[in-house]
Length: 144
Image 1 (spheres, rainbow, N blue to C red):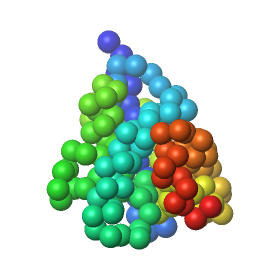
Image 2 (image 1 turned 90 degrees about the vertical axis):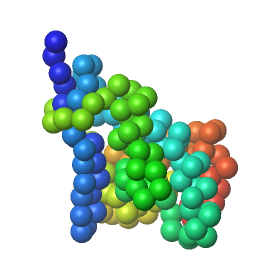
Image 3 (image 1 turned 180 degrees about the horizontal axis):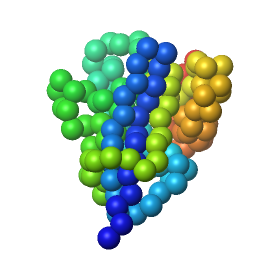
């Protein structure tokens, strides 16, 4: 049996982080982007509720989705979502997907110059999220 390796992560000007996952199926970067978008759609309402509880004005970033609320629920994040919902396992990688972690996931113009220069896949995901009916109640609160 062939095992495929995936690097999923993010970057900022100061830091980056990634997880190494494996799967028995081969996925393209676009396939991974589609799964990340699905995960954000599934996880965003809980993250938004936590943000409201904390009365935070900080937008929910990809870094937040990637790490989750590690203090309260360390398994509620992107990587565990991919493991639980898409059959991934942790290991080494074949392909990598990463994004600039500081930008608002619902504002493709946030940090745009930096993200565009690095061909950031979240720009397209953000545009798609803004069109997704499941995200409509959240999109109107963004600055764009």
